[in-house]
Length: 164
Length: 164
DNA sequence: TGCATCTAACAACTCAGTTGCATCTGGCGC
DNA sequence: GCGCCAGATGCAACTGAGTTGTTAGATGCA
Image (cartoon, rainbow over all chains, first blue to last red; front, top):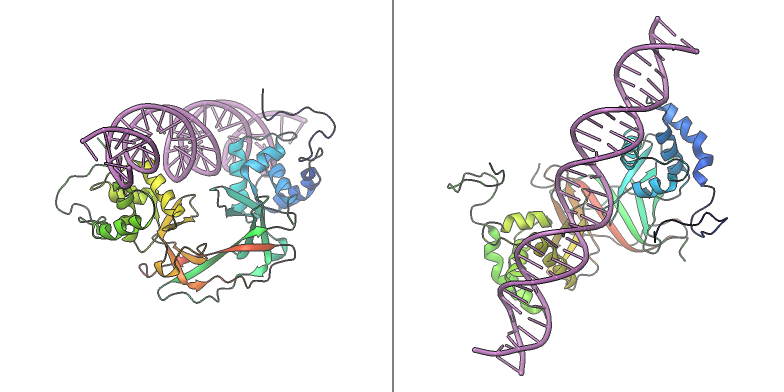
């Protein structure tokens, strides 16, 4: 009858981990949030831990779904926490081709989010988006006269390492 | 009482041209549509003429609004015509940062839309998006191991020639 | 001109994201 | 440890872009 429920057997799913990977990132998330001047709340910890556990960008829906079992959070709160993470420089958002915002932790080594001037890669097979921090997006393009660029957004589409 | 109507006085608006520029592009639009195997209809002609008259990308709303006075077209029809223009290779669509699709005529000299491998420029002042057909988006970037790119999307943000 | 087929218009819907507001809570002062 | 309150959460309702289904109408060929 319902399409989204699933029997709670041991490992009936081959897609979603039984023990969410984000749980182990909770201490790390708490530490990062404490470093900001803002409050340490359950939703913030859970959402940040979730992002920390991923190697690709996640939509608000991905986050809400990942947290649904152990940390069910109102979808509006997920939106607001993700926006807050961007505001305080912990994460950045990426506009997808499907009109959905995706969020990803900023590279810690790049410190204080340098206007996230890095490239993104979207896999056309698994639909996941990755940050390519190693690909420089220097402004050494020759634009037609009159255009004064301030930011570059370099996006690749193709197949990722998981989808050979 | 209504918020969108406007007195029909001569030049009460300082934003929208009294005689739409797209009217002069109607013959050109008709010719282009006749070149396809599909039907020549009023909405297709009007929408295409509208796009032809612009030097920047237009959203469905921009198009519907531009045509509202002389060629009022149902918004669903605008969506379908724009999609059709993309399908037949006359135009291409650009994903904006505001979750809105924008459409622009393909450069005729680039013939048969080569997967629109060109750069785009979005003005942060006037919010308009332009195609930079002159900026090559060659795939000569060094990506991390495992990423096999098939397409590149290069997007600039800054100030356009109209917003010095 | 007649007719089969494609297209437009309308209404209703989906879905991501936002806003308003009442309630709750983290963290500070006492 | 207790109480307070600014700020955060949860809920409901909304917005706005885009889609789908269906019927009526226009196009173009015979």
